[in-house]
Length: 461
Image (tube, rainbow, N blue to C red; front, side, top):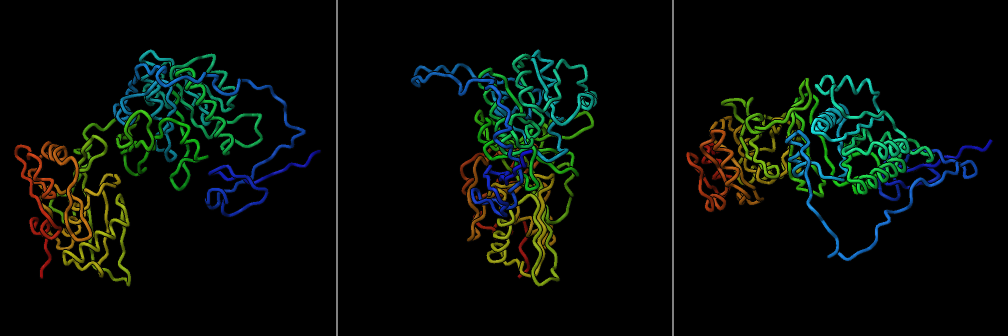
């Protein structure tokens, strides 16, 4: 009997080596070398190639290529359509990733139910759950009477045959890490298996026009598991985020060949499935503390949507040699920079105080326009005086303490007006170029110290 041979393969890039290494010499990732079984060449089964290589398409000039009209099919969930750029495009390959239990399968089962009710032929392929488990979830989502076709299979050859025989308009593969090709010696979820399975599905989607959703697992670092080439092969990469302790789920696009990657979809996890949150600003501010120091409202932009969020800061006396800095929802290095600016330019003695920062609702803020609101929240907690409840703050802060202009202030001001805010503290240069909405006063400032003076947050001399 031939001795089984093994090698070590990098789960990130696919590099192979006969010995284990702590660091992959190809991509530089640590602890990604996994042991895989290598079948001997004399016992490999000889199977006929089931499909011709390549697409068989002829080369032609650009001017002779017909584009046609790009049709967006509504998914039934407006927030998902917003992130996708208007709906599901024919022949698109969409990868949806997220933590276990975040709601990926629930979301896609709702989409399949809506598309099936709209008269589309839908195939749901599950390599993780039985048909009974899928039916139980469908009953909870009120989709048990749907005409969607359910297939529990993880052999890619069998899935490909079913796709060709059923010819669906839409298909869900849950998940791509469970699919495998039997003629390959590696285990399901390995780099070669994921890459080959995704290649088969991509070829089918592009040649038939069937839109395919791929559910992807994530690693403990939060990145999609499997080879990085998987994200390059697909047309759209969506990340489903959220805290299991909160009911809200965020859907972001990090790659989209058919639309913007700046849009954000917000869902609420309920007993009957995912419910789209239409008025995100009102939802995020509904539980804001009244009259408490250290809280400041900021209007951010997620793609085309303005959203009001509550930035919270807690500054307390430190009894440690190095003051503690705890940040949630904000860039930690940006927080350190702004605290240094506040100490240098606004006379806040932060060297002996702990600072805790939080963005309520589980959101993550990345735009510089949130700098001024963060600074005002810190100053409010420092002097223990609240920011007035009808004020919203926005602006970018530089190292010299100057307040820089921000984009689309008019759209942000309109959202503030809609929710009853009557005063907006903003950069003077931005306020000079827009007309304030009715009932709203714009207060332009040039420096952080001026902003603190307007809100009566300056510390005693």
